Length: 321
Image (cartoon, rainbow, N blue to C red; front, top):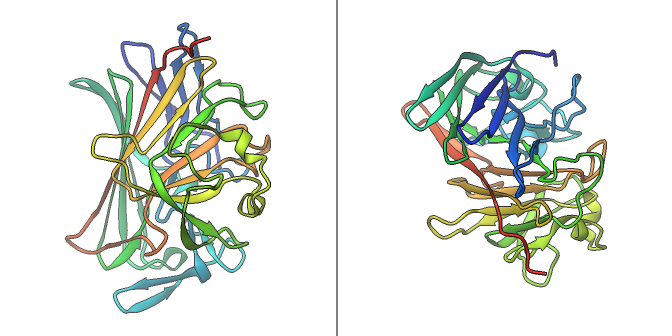
């Protein structure tokens, strides 16, 4: 991956988002803590990349496809394999590794925005359809970072798009951040096999996967549950059931006060605690994406793909002594 220009969105409160056309990716998100100190809380991508997909748009498919077999309307397409016997994030020519087109940032009523465009030809890495993709980032004046994912195809295919930003609300990526709290609106979680592929859905109650109330993430990573041993921590899909208007997930740093709330119309939140990062567990990925049962969503002529992810940044009150 070659370096490319970084586009900046900034709101009147000083929150700044750096975006790159390479992978239509988030490069930085600079937000204040309770005392007004601004730092970047999004894990930067390295050049060349170390395989983390940090900040990138995952397309045409977020996640793994078992055996590289894609069922589409009664047929099965054999996809290119790039993760042992499976396909990961859409294959070796996925759009996280492509420079997207853009017309640059725009100022609009209440927000700044930038839109990225990319295409993928029929048969690329085995996927059917000549496909067109668009990702729009909007930074609102009230500190919302909205991501609008859109795609269309000239023939039936399947897609699951997401963003792979990693977060550490302390801004210090030199070590795993103790004490940061995670809450996920999910009653059930998919358990994985040894290849990190979901095999069955189970209740979260009585397990380390119960984030229905805020719980310290890094401290749970070090547990001895057999599912945590597979991926050096969490690498699991949670079936979301957030009430209307409620966040799907909330990440909070009680020490500095920064808080991130995630809203989405995606059915699943994939939690990856970064066990394979160069600094293990120094940041967490919260990937809102399609259900692994499908796989993905059917996209056809006249039936485009459209999904929304929104990160809201603010500060929480200091805990009582």
